[in-house]
Structures are given as C-alpha cells and as structure tokens.
Image: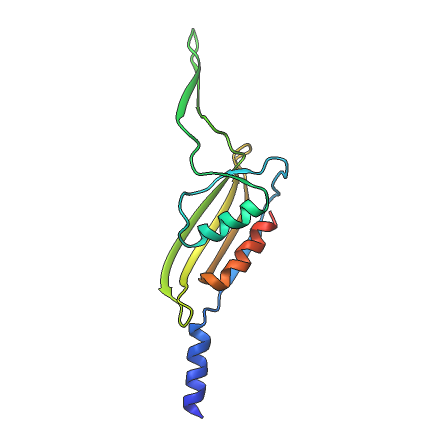
Length: 146
C-alpha cells in the first residue's frame, strides 16, 4: 500500500501541476490591437503568438530603425522615434527549470507584462509556473481577456 501511495504521489508531482495569476490594471483598446513581441517561439511565446493572432492582433517583432526627428534653431527640440509605432508592448520573462514527466513539456516560470506605449501604463501582468502543455490553456485564456 505504501508503494502505491508513493507512486501515486510521484506521478501527481511529475504531472506538472501549474499555477497562474493575472493582475489587471486596465483594458486594451480593441481598435488598436498592435503590439511588439519578442522574436521566436520558445516557451510561452508560441502560445502567445497563436492566441494573439487568433484574437486579431497584429504582432511586430521589431519597431524598425530608430530615428531622431525635430527642429534645430535657437532651441533644440528633438524626439527619438521608430518607423513602426505599435500601441502595445508584450514583455516576456521566462525560465525553464525542468522537464515534466511523463509528457516531456518544459517546466517554466514566466511573467508576461502588457504595456501601453501611448500612456506608458502597465495594463496586465500574467505570472505563473508549471508545465507548458498544461499552462497553455491558462495563458491563452488570460490573453483573450485583454
């Protein structure tokens, strides 16, 4: 009996119980769903890009070349700008710390922060950890709620 309990407990731990927490401080303007997102598809980026694209977002991995514009005269008034100006920015911090058994998914700690480039405000923070295959639905649901 003891062996069965130890085995069941081990499988439960290894199956990738995960947690996710969403802090919302504002809403996205549904008429301006453009955002910069890191390049690649490692870890949470894959589910983020799929979900945001399905939700009608235009995703940009580069804002383009940096330009300095303005006037030079008795007073200098210069502004740093980019070729493309998406309304939002997705900041992603993630760390894979293990592989989940038996499914082989990465076990990750992650934080996704949505920043409004127009106001500079943080709109949402999505924080979690666990096995990616199990967390994908939680991440997608949080992104659909923007």
